[in-house]
Length: 182
Image (cartoon, rainbow, N blue to C red; front, side, top):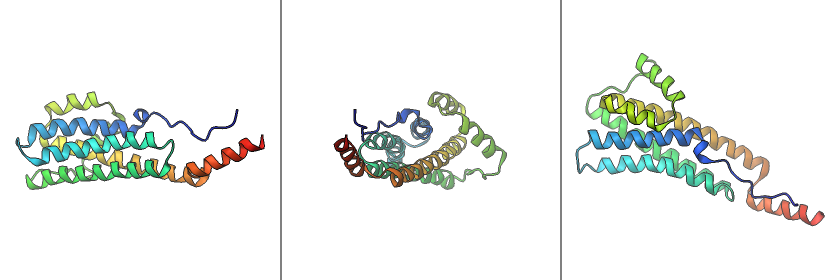
């Protein structure tokens, strides 16, 4: 049996970055509907940015079976969407004179620690119900930063893999040459 050039990709649902973006989406959905005024366009914009962060990871991972380029592009779209959402949360805090927690503050350190170990969206759906808007924003911001680092590392690994293995056309050619030699 010849070696296949279509390497099955891992399940995107197992990626911690995907799990974090699901948490971000759920938090954002709750936050936008609870703290933003009905009719405010920011509600849809924030929810769509959160959704785009999540969905583009799924789509990119699935496309990655045949296109490293598409996978990398879509993961970068996910990162860009999360940065758009990050700005919305920062804007919310700034214009309302609420605090963006200092990275070294006790609240920030504690939140980073919790967010680093909790990737289940059900946990956050319950936790945000009893939190202030300031706290929810800072939790979301923390998760966005963590997802961004994970996506950046994943993209770096994809680049390294591309350099080692090449793209689908190169892999198809190598598989065909190997098949002919048999």
